[in-house]
Amino acid sequence: MIAVIPARAGSRRIVNKNIQKFCESPMISYPIRACLDAGVFSQVIVYTDSEAIAEVALRLGAKVPYVRSAASSGDHATLSEVLCEFLTQLSMDQELPDLACVLATAVFLDGGVLKEACARFLKGEGRNLISVARLPVAVERSLVLDESGCLGFRYPQYRSTRSQDLPVSYYDAGQFYFLNSGEFARENQIFGAHCEAFELDSWRVQDIDTWDDFKEAELKYKYFRDRGLVHG
Image (cartoon, rainbow, N blue to C red; front, side, top):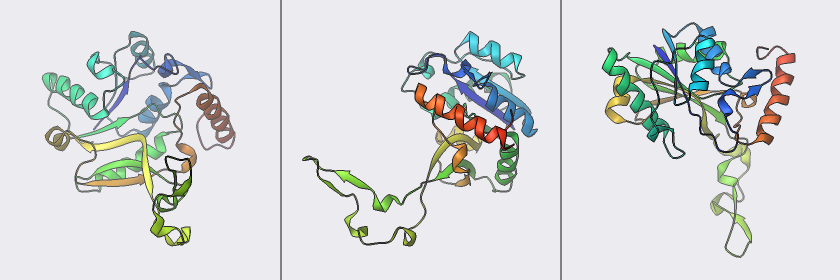
């Protein structure tokens, strides 16, 4: 099984986001270290269009065998498109591995979580395994504003239903996706017909899209690092 970490240079809101120093280490170092610590991957590959990111990744012990194209590095490229391009390049050099894990630059991820997720995936009889987190509120009780700015229920039929009586909902945490390479190559989508969920603790999930997000995440990381829940 291989691990693939797509990392592009063209982040708009946080320039050079993947190699920005986050708690004294480049952001890309966190998923690389998690993959290496997990001890379940034959290769840890960073797929990037950036020489600077490639240099950091190589120094940290990852491999960078291919250059990501401009087309797959744009703002509108989907993860499926990026992965499809990577697997096409890989197939030219070697037989595709049956299993793969695609990861984001997630700073709260660690090797223990990845190892546990991998074990679950291998028991899943070919089902993809997607990292998810629990929504803090019931989506059935969500509110919307109409054209005049008045507040109302998105689902009026649930306006009198207690939150505890509604089902738990989840969202794509975006941190990792374990999948069958052959099935992906046929369907060209990560969320195929057979997906299983791996629920992450909510504190491990945070998008870092702005500098405010970045600073908040650093404060949170230091808090959990001091309590031994993430590596320093």
